[in-house]
Length: 388
Image 1 (cartoon, rainbow, N blue to C red):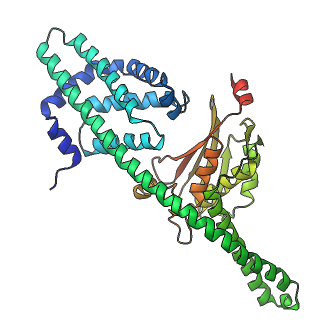
Image 2 (image 1 turned 30 degrees about the vertical axis):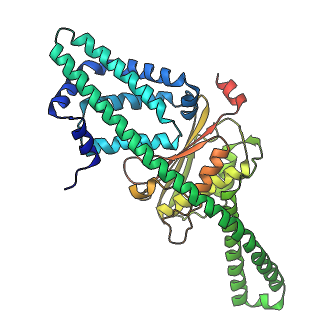
Image 3 (image 1 turned 120 degrees about the horizontal axis):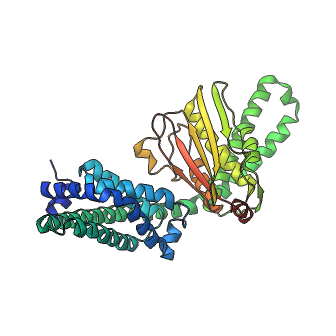
């Protein structure tokens, strides 16, 4: 069997059982210091404007400190197997997604090296053999960590560049075809309007088919509109935004089977934001249609809203089959769909609209069945003042 990249890295730095033993011993000594190290780590990162911007300031740091403590535990406790490698790869991918320059990670890794070496020096001051073994093992595993991050960062960055090139070509094609399709669709709509006013429309079968033509023309127009929205930056109509009202408006446009239960919590308690109600309505409609399609004739769809210090969070969950691992990384790419009759524009458009509002959306898998999307929208200055 061919050697994996992780096995090659361990062989290259000569990482073996003695190093694993030394790291586990260090974990026993360092575990109670993880919280303090996490504080120092993120204080250093937030001191740099570029890194602070990539991490959205301090809004995410509380969660990230918890994640870092878990990361340090895995770093020193192991097991250092392929599952460990896959988990570490995700970090490099996240750095690409949030546009975090990798030179910040070199500086941050050096800080961790200093903090752990300080613990080693303190506890092994009278045992030079153990001190040297711990320092060597720590150096090896941190070098492996950096190598994994750089490898996955490079892979994902190249993939992202390739996607951007495809999207650029896609945008040029869509812009041309979309405008060309508007003309014949307009002619069909006009002819349909005239036909409905003629005696032909009194025939029940003819009326049924005329209605079907109208529905399909409306569908085609919506697809063209979504395609054009994907390639242009529609200006936001900045006005007071009540998400509970937008949600209710969106519900009226989504057909929900009788066996599907819909519920929303916390929306009425959210403060008034600033944004475009029409575009946010499109966000809710697209997500609801996807969720209802996923659960089928029977299931649940739930939206839970909450307010943080600088943003509101909306979590939409459904009881459908969820999203497979192979789809997750590309779920917000145009033309990526699992629907038999879908074209894969709903979620990319949702992401684009939320980003126009200064927000974000992520797919956050959870235990059990179902999909889970987490959206964040910034509070308006007046709402932040009220929180303070």
